[in-house]
Image (cartoon, rainbow, N blue to C red; front, side, top):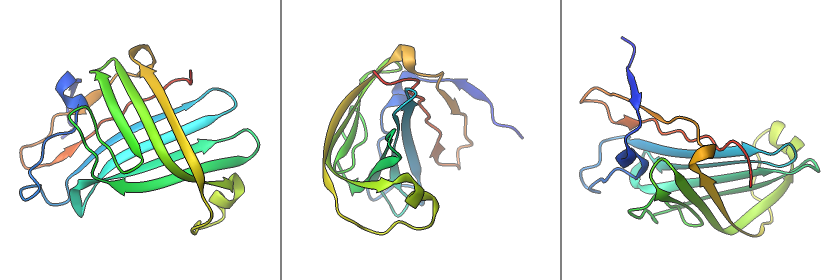
Length: 165
């Protein structure tokens, strides 16, 4: 049976509260922002880890026009009432369904995009990276949430960023 979609509830914008000792097995909750302005593209993802839902995994990929890409991945427990957070990456919901701010303050690796297509990329040298980017409601696609059966523990939360500022 197909799941019915309903308009997003503003409360769904925020991380769902979990008690560390009562978190469902393999629970996951994910946030995603991405965009492209014709020259530079970016993709950021934040998700709870299945082995420990209190631990968030952050991922940043920035595609540069010179054939290079900037990559960063980290883990952390920096969730707040306003949004999820790994160690270096934080998403802050300023106004539900209207405005978010993405914060990154850490290190990242500069690589050739070709290397991303040729196999597993091992560790390498990193450089400091810091940014803060706002995402306004006019740039967000419609957000929907699947009504899930009581015994299922999953949340589909996709936000599409349609352009860089």
